[in-house]
Image 1 (cartoon, helix red, strand yellow):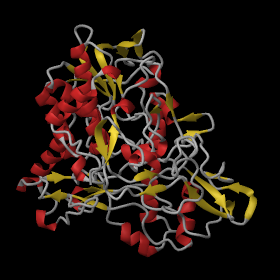
Image 2 (cartoon, helix red, strand yellow; image 1 turned 60 degrees about the vertical axis):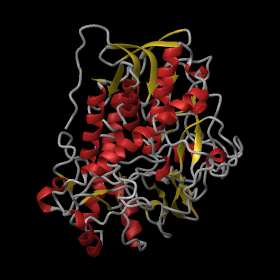
Image 3 (cartoon, one colour; image 1 turned 120 degrees about the vertical axis):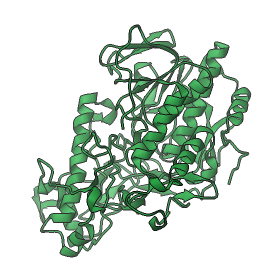
Image 4 (cartoon, helix red, strand yellow; image 1 turned 135 degrees about the vertical axis):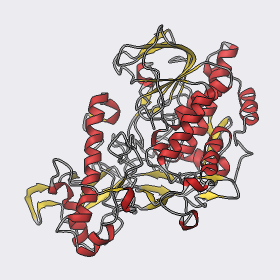
Amino acid sequence: MALALVDAWGETPKADVVVYGDASGGVVAAVQAARMGKSAILVSQYGHLGGLTSSGLGWSDIGNDKILGGLSREFYHQLYLHYQKPEAWVQQKREEFGNKGQGVPGLNEKTELASVFEPKVAEAVFDAMVKEAGVRVVKGRLDLEKGVMKDGTTITGIRLEDGTVIEGKVFIDASYEGDLMPLAGVSFVTGRESNSEFDEQGNGNTGVAKKNQLPNGIDPYVVAGDASSGLLPGVNPDLGGEKGEGDHRLQAYCYRMVLTDVPENRIMIEKPDGYDEADYEILFRAMEAGQKGGFFKLSPMPNRKTDSNNNGGISTDYIGMNYGPDWDWSTLDHEEREKLAAKHRDWQLGLVWSVQNHPRVPEPIRKAYAPWGLPKDEFTDNGHWPYNLYVREARRMRSDFVMTENHCKRTLPVEDPVGMGAYTLDSHNTQRVVHNGMVKNEGDIQSYLGGKAYGISYRSLVPKAEECTNLLVPWALSATHIAFGSIRMEPVFMILSQSAATAACMAIDAEIPVQDVPYDKLRARLVADGQALGVLPME
């Protein structure tokens, strides 16, 4: 159910803290500001709160649940409490749920946290948090051409597409794209750095990926064996650079599909309009090369639903379709993003339909995937499809401090942590290429950190002082591509957003730039509010 939103203002809306972006971190930032006694406005682009956390990412990527504290822990605890109620179990009995999660029980009795949950339940928890805190929510999207007004290094207001101007004292960019940053004159990067730039090992061009790879033997040409027929859609002629070399490419996006096999709650997927069999030729050839399963995950959520993420060499990731030679997702306007997101949606619907119905798919595979459809009780105002595309990476701020692989691996220190991460250094594939006469994927990195937590610097959340003095960026923060691959997880987004909002309130009280918030005082407040900063190293 969508949260009631403020769409009309009797006067210019103003708040102490203005948060742009309705994802999980945006909600947490606005709630924290309100709980600290500040007026807070949350700008919601979608009219539904929670971002990926309420759009199908029901298997939370945490790495070590000891990093959770404050509002992030409160969120997952509220989810846990929901599933203790008998009435929460509608499509299955509690004892029928396997209770699996990412390395921990999905509903963990020891910690009283739920890391596995239904999207509609997550959204309801976010809605309740915002309502209880008294956060004002306005639905709208940033004017991507003239959306920021500044006085020197100070943002004075932001302008939405409909012309609404929202004034504030401190602003938080909680959008997945980092849309406020460039309009505020803040430096940023996209794509992958070279390994040499920050002395890393997992950045840049990976060469042919080791995991999430296609089977051997897939011919790259439209007519197998005939190079003159041209390459299959989405296949590049070569790697486009040396291993470890930086480039403009972005890791692939997808929707975290939510599926169910409960007939009374299921809508079967039909062939999408504009379906083109050629778009799935790699899928069919992968099956001909011996692939029998793993075309999308069926990670179980309560009530016989799934978090169906990418799984393997040919799956839900629309590889190479979020950038081009002179554009990427972040450079598109809102309407262009909507059109590209629709292409991702139709690709995934077509994938499921093909696996279930296409005559080139072996019958045992069709039968294995036949039970799955969209749940009637999720995303009820959006065709039962998730609201948010999984924008895994777009812009990343470039401030005076850059989080790198070496900070995540704890070979370099972080002296001012305001949150902790612990998940694998994770990048999805970026492109498909011809390698040794076969189609192969490039870009996948999964470097396990052993569950060891690392600190994330406050300085990586604030821009250079000469660029902007009242902006914090808890998602598109200052990090390299591969470090961001771990930091970008939703629980960490919430953790950093609480810290960003805390710093924003302290900057307002002291009437100082966000760069000048004293770390010792900030840390003391974070710890008092339950943030799990720990004593490094934290296991």
